[in-house]
Length: 234
Image (cartoon, rainbow, N blue to C red; front, side):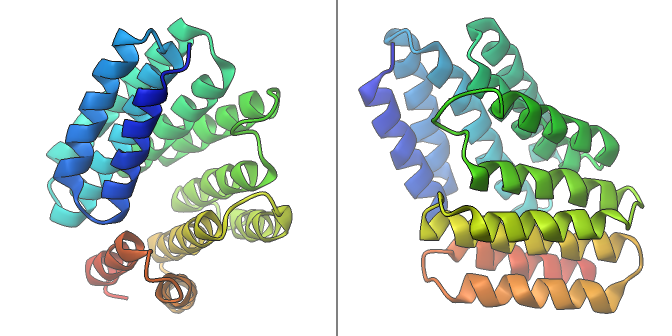
């Protein structure tokens, strides 16, 4: 069954994360986990682990403390294990996406790309819910940019095509579109920086920054862009 209280707490956690209150987000995620278990919402129990990973990754990015990424990897593996036990395909797909993000932080870029491929493959076989053109395009960008990080610069065009698909999808909210587009350009910037293409990296990061500045709600994204500039000297 789907837990209405669990979903409400899940949304509150997302709002807290968007507002930069990461401690509150973690507390709400744990509260949602307990409610999901009580209400026998197996899919929600698995999905909240993936949500928790996002919060932990942001804390790792913000502080530079690698221990957060270690925790994130465990959260991602737990999310996939739990999703597979629940047998809910969309949650399995999301969990592969979460593990791809964890692999990215661990700089296991080829493996990250494979998990994003798996997420796309499984999600495309499902109906409704998270199976949207925009979500699939975002995952394609993740897969391509991770392969750029691994040295495959031919994936730049694949990543850009995915952003065009995202723009044309028409099934994302304005907020989602801005978050996913700015994230996609940030990943392109990272891929270029990893391959010594500094001017191209600056170009893509500037595009990401322009998108993030267009919406006051993208506070976390603006912080992440600032952290990337400082980390990579862009």
